[in-house]
Amino acid sequence: MIFILTGAGLSAESGLGTFRDKSGLWTEYDLKKVATPEGYAADPSTVLDFYNARRANAASAEPNAAHHALARLQAARETFIVTQNVDTLLDRAGATQVLHMHGRLDRVRCNKCGARWDAPEIMDPFDHCGQCGAQTVRPDVVWFGEMPHGLDKIEDKLTRASLFVAIGTSGTVYPAAGFVEMATAHGIPTLELNLEPSGGVFDEGHYGPATKVVPAWVNEITA
Ligand code: BJW
Image (cartoon, rainbow, N blue to C red; front, side):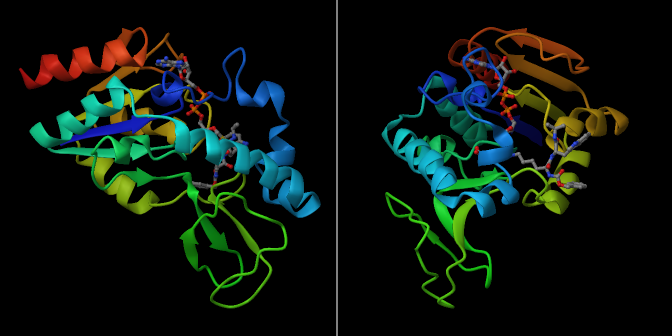
């Protein structure tokens, strides 16, 4: 089974900003203010404005050739896809059972009872949970200091994979940044597909824009 980990670089050519590139989101916004539970508690309006704008952006974006190539790969070979991206472009390209380890922009969660539902176009600090009535709703994304989703399943799949591929991620955010080492420790070959080398230790790398490099690699291994 091929284990794929994707990051913001996969969706960059669909017009969604990355985080740490020269004009990335974290150069414009203070991540402590918009991507931590403490930031949300201190100023929910600013955080919701940030996510409302990104939700609108993601909704108007289209999957690119790299998303479609990964959906094609999944149809041809046993492939498990984990994404750090909060957009749903892989799902919309036809990829199945994508594990969104950092959550999804298009979903809302109640901090009190854990209920989840589809996000409205505009989330408001005064929104209430439809299930328990608490005024504790938040975007269903994983902020710094919070536990990413599906880690047990990820570890199980990763340690049984025949190949680990990281696509368009800088490898700065843990635990995802540690997956390449985990794969290597289990004797699993590792491959990086990225605009440029991330600095992680991979057995092999193919570098260039995701819309070129990912379809080329998928064509090569499914030929
Ligand atoms: C292209 C391209 C093109 C461009 N084609 N490629 C010290 C040591 C170790 C850990 C920590 C530490 N201090 C704190 C921590 C923990 C912390 C962490 O890792 N911090 C680091 C910054 C040091 N992690 C956490 O808090 C996580 N939780 C956690 O650790 O829980 C405890 C735990 C304990 C034990 C086990 C397990 C867990 C939670 C992290 C949550 C991250 N959340 C965010 C925001 C999500 C919501 C939102 O989107 O707003 O997730 S932050 C942001 O970074 C987002 C991304 O998913 C994530 C990763 O970014 P990504 O995808 O790599 O993007 P970039 O911009 O960094 O890179 C883009 C790449 O694309 C580059 O390489 C480009 O070259 C490339 N590229 N254009 C191909 N066209």
